[in-house]
Amino acid sequence: MKIGMFDSGIGGLTVLAKALELMPDAEYLYYADSDNAPYGTKTTDQVKEYSDRAVSFLISLGAEAVVIACNTATSAAASYLREKYPIPIIGVEPAVKPAVAMCEGKHVLVLATPLTVREKKLHDLIDRVDNAGAVDLLAMPELVGHAEKADFDSDELKEYVEKTLEGFFAENQRTASDYSVVVFGCTHFNHFKTVLEPFFEKNTAFIDGAEGTVKNMMNITAGKRLSDPADRGIRYFESGREVTERDKLDLYEMLLAHLK
Ligand code: DGL
Image (cartoon, rainbow, N blue to C red; front, side, top):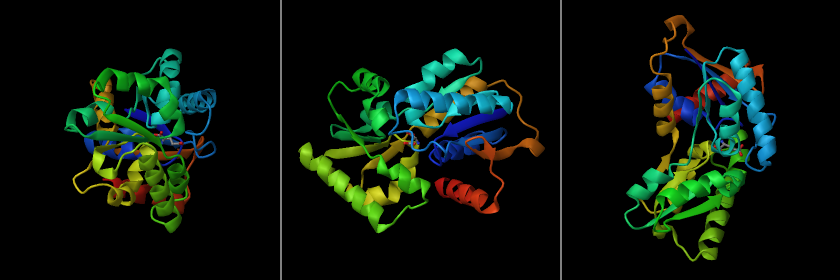
């Protein structure tokens, strides 16, 4: 079985790592739209267009299902893509429901891109599951650029995180101790768990939507034939060009291994 997955860049590797763990018997085509990253600061129509191109490319390579391994593209384009294409299209959503269920009277901080924070999809989800007003939203767009540069611990990155969180807490009269759960509402943000953790209390939970998405993918594709062992594995593409350079492939493999 061929499964296509796409994101604006390396964020979707979070979902791919989970898919490889739970469903290793498939052939994965991973599409990083590096020509158009970041998505989170673009318009909804632009992200629809990029997502359309990614899905049509993955289908041309034989993908039998496509996972949108990007919260931003899911908010902007999932319904449109599902109407347009006949194959299953599975999206990733911020894990707001489990976060609210486990927050024990404290607050939940959802970190996402500006587009996800502004789209109706997330606000509808919060309206459905958060009766107590527990959820706060914070856009951290610059994290995506740091991830795409493979910068996971520079001083500049840490200063951005500190400045953004402190500004948000001051503006909303909150402190880090108000939060028991932080939701990675952008797949790129999992790469920054070790940078974010020191800003919160020790027992704060950090969760994402990867596992739910992969389980959904497994239910939807259940019954399809698995791939022959020789075909299993991952092929990487950057905006439609197959990645063959050893150093790039090593970076993808290293990031995947780090996410396991
Ligand atoms: N990784 C994406 C997400 O989950 C998008 C990041 C971006 O390109 O801005 O939202």
